[in-house]
Structure formats: C-alpha cells, structure tokens
Image (cartoon, rainbow, N blue to C red; front, side):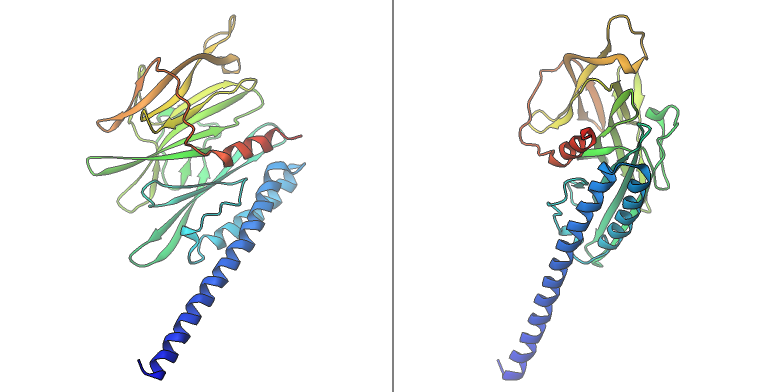
Length: 295
C-alpha cells in the first residue's frame, strides 16, 4: 500500500469517524431536550404552557427524525415519549399525550421510515381524529387520521402477503372513564398508513378496532403474552345497580379474555387463565402514567 493511498484512507476514515461522533453528540443533545419538553407537555401547570412546550417538541422531533442515524438510535433516555420499533423494523412510532385542564387528553404521533436501498429517512405526522367520533370501533381512518392513544406495544402478523401491525394502547379519555385500545395499522400500495381493519372477530361481530371503556377509579391490564400468543385483557362489567353502557361504573371482574391471531384475524377466546408476562418492559408507559397522576 503506497503512502498516498494510506493518506487518503486515513482522511476518509477520519471524516467518517468525525461524522459519527458529531451525530452521536447531536443525538445526546436532542435526547435531553426532547425529554425536558415532553416532561413539560405532561406536567406543566396550565394548558398554554403545555401547548408551547408541545410546539417546541414537535419542531425538534421533526428535525431529529431526518438526522442520519436517527432510525437506529435507541433514544433510551427519553422517559416521557413512547418510542416503539415495529417488530420487522419497517418503521418506528414516536407517540405522546398532552393532558388538558378540563380532564381530556390530546395525542400526537409520528411514523418514521428508513429506506434501506436509498438510505433516505422520512416521516408521517398523524392527526388525532378520535374526538366526537361515532362508531369508532368500525371506522377506517386514512390520510394521516388516527384514533389517538398512547401505545405500549406493536405486534406484527402477516396473512396472504398482507402485513398487519396491531397496536396496543391506552387513552385517558376524560374525567370519568379511561379506555384501552387495540388498533390495526396497515399500508396501502402507496405505503400510506390505514388505521383500522375488519379483522377483530368478537362475539357480537367483527370490528376494525377494539375500545374498552371503564371507570376512572379502577385500573385494568391489556398486554400481549409472548408465551401463549394471546393479547390478554380484563373482562369488564358494571357494578351492581349500574346500567349497561354506563362506562364510568365498569370495573374488572377478575376474569380474563384474550385475542389470538388465526387465519388472518384476531379471534376472541373467553375466560382464559391469567398470565404474568415479565419479559415485557413497559417503562415508558408507566412513567407517563405516573406523570399524569402527579399533582
């Protein structure tokens, strides 16, 4: 190897390492800033302060999502954003919630994509269309619209060469009730997101998404168990004296149902044993819920 070639190789390697170090420093800086802003969105004392922090958070995040290397960066030090990789590494979800003074919640989400062939990054900003939506369990949402929730898990299933991404989430809803959400994300031929698909087979018919509403005064569980391959969730029923459909009085009855993916559909199985899946790490969602409970 001649001296000129060695020198050129040294220059190329130096530039590459310097670039990697610069990106790493950028990520550390933005990670700290995103964490600070997300915390303000969650815990600031007034809606106006939260909205200003959220505006800055959106600006910074949109910048970060286009920085080379961001798709493979872990962002593990951000506690107040839910950041989840699709199991097949086809996209990432950046997702958070802004609680309002009136007891309502506003949700935000971005889908980030990385083209391995062109090595280009792009993102899609989602719009929370859940407010005042009727028949939400049967709606198909397109054009960036989405049923707002805070996600804890993304599952991937394929059937007949079609990919389905099942989103398990939480919605604080209002001052009386909370919701658990199972939504279905898939993509059209132009790779644009579609939320909702008629593949949830329940006892009362087929739904495009599942929404469980229950009393704010209680808590429930909904999570995928890798060992059994069920999405496990509490059975809910109204307390004595409450009428059906008065969800502010719905509580768990200590029994569990599950959904299992068979032949291209999620199918309900009632009264399954309770399983404690200790493998799952839901630290981000727990931190966010803890922040919502803070005075």
